[in-house]
Image (tube, rainbow, N blue to C red; front, side, top):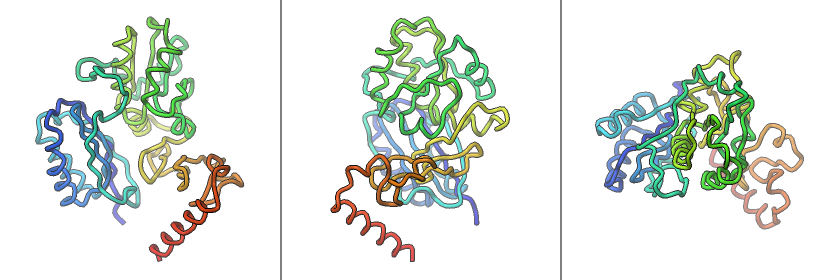
Length: 294
């Protein structure tokens, strides 16, 4: 069986006519047999696609024929089956939602740190290392010595900065996220707030896992991804996490071992709110899926 290629991609570029890109891009993806989700906005493109190697290459070649996408950032991983069930190309206000007008990574961002140099920052006691991802992602895995902002979504990041980082404008701050895009905005925002020594991991966690040998790695756990794999391990293979079908929460192996976890029905995060009517609906959906799979 040939492996499915999964390409996470993004690029900040001025796209004043981004709405007009939606239909042609959808047609190229459909012709190439590629599934996944792409976001288009006036500030650029962001998303993840999956398909055959030739299909992914076709879509990326199409994108890079536009001079604005020639430096498109791309990271690949592989799976035995496609982690997407459909193709979605959405029009958005932002390709990653910070919710602060005027933040522009095209104008300035923090200093990029290559994966093979990242460990030195993690082990420097003078550097504050921040995981810019959300709580539900962080619980599956993170870097040693990293601080979590405790956010439920990226829009809460500015409040975290105002609450926890005020007065530390002179301190070196290093940030990371899944593929790099959130840190483009986060570092740009911090610079706008007067922070002077701001760094971020080039290519994000995914590039670090691809580049740094596991025996040298300071990554602990698995990395949450926004598709049906739910998480990947250090070899970028599908991990052990699953997503609760009832509430959408990603679940660790410990949570899956809980008495509150029932596949497709409930987990420790939603068991207390599970009504008989909701259970019946979830059981019906589970049975329909099983019947469809034969």
